[in-house]
Amino acid sequence: MARILIIGSGPAALGIGTELLRRGHDVRVLDHADRYADAHGAGLGFAAYAHAAQLTGTVPANRFLAARVALAMDPRAGLDVRAELVRRRPDVVLVDADRLTALREAERSGLPTAVLMPTLHRYLAGRWARGPVGFATRLRRLRPATLWARAARVLVATDPDLDGPLPDGAVHTGAVVGRLRPPAREPDPLVAVALGARAYPGKQELLQRVLDGLGAWGGQAVVGIGDGGDGESLRSPDTVTLYRRLDHADVLARAHLLVGHGGHDTTLRALANDLPVLVLPGHPDLVHPMVGAAVEGAGAGRALPPDSAPDAIAAAISALLGDGPHRSAAAAVGARVRSRDGAGAAADEVEALLPG
Image (cartoon, rainbow, N blue to C red):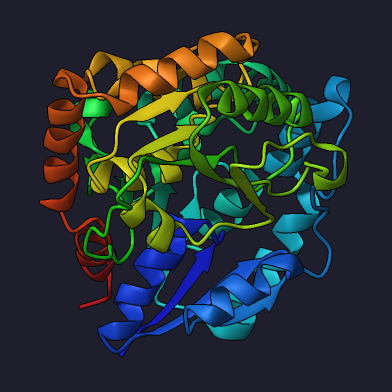
């Protein structure tokens, strides 16, 4: 049994942690206190940051990217990582790629350290690292590419065909999509709408346009509001049921189409369920537009501008619910995603770093 510390607690990190736990390792997650329930629900140990700042609530649009840059480079996170490394003395550390200060502290410790990229590598190495984050990190001498290159492994948890070639030292482990339920499609078309669990600028307005589009389409839909959405002020058709959180495993097994914002995890889970996807990118500087383009490029759905009129959204929903090559394309991507055990392959890579 080895002691493994995971810094970050997104779905991919928790999926990999759960697999390592199943293999008999002592797995602990370090993240912000509001992530305790997710880690605990996965059966993993948890330590909360004592000093690091966190992004909570709705950040004004003009401060959204600055807040994300501050999170990536928060020096106080380094204090917490250093303390946890001394306290737990892990054998291996797995760090989310965007936790730059945490990654630097893990590498400085001399412990075997792997980087987890839970999304498209070409996004993180491209727009993310070369945009506002890259500019700020150059000023702080905290360059993402340099830190990633120093790691013993870079694990890219996505579908290789939707991503592209990787540099030396990085490996596609496959998407971590969790346990999939057997398909149980509703007899009538059901649309699932998931525009992200987290808040981002313009989310409320995007939710309303999608709801108006669903009303113009006229069929049954379930909508997850998530954070940053005010359900009380949304105008919702009678055919739509609103939830604060969707049970994706259940809903995606029953639905016929996902309408999403281009979030990597939900999009890949929908495709793993053979669902076509309509993407209305949530934020231009996040991975959302790139995921939408990848889905459309694979023929597995469509991408529309997020400010599309409700009638255009309704027309796209009707088209994607119909028969056509997009359905077989989505099923082909789904079969490819299911053929790779993303959590298992990543766990293999982590175990390969254990001291002999």
